[in-house]
Image (cartoon, rainbow, N blue to C red):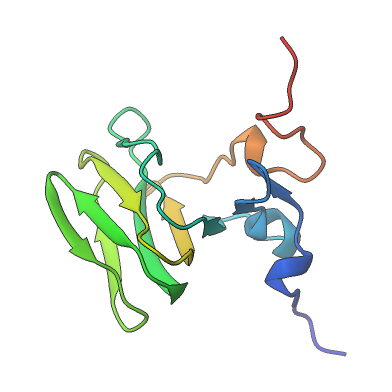
Length: 132
């Protein structure tokens, strides 16, 4: 048997009510972030954010469905043939319309050792279900 890991996305542990698949941890990736997001239709509450404080750059790829990405106020549709790189200091926000979207997100800090956030680790509680 070869030295690799394969797992179906729908069988991966997920958080945020199933929307964020812990793909990095499920595959054993340690050098960069990998996440699959299953976003519902008509999503407008995805958090606008940047990574200026941690220096992480991200790459997004639409796997299926339809979604728009807003980068620094420039909103455009994603498609399955176009990858988008966003530098740390740029603001980003995802939107969906009438159909859901599955998006692959990759991230890492150039020249740095990757430090996975707790929310991406297997077995960590879903932040939406934590009690104060």
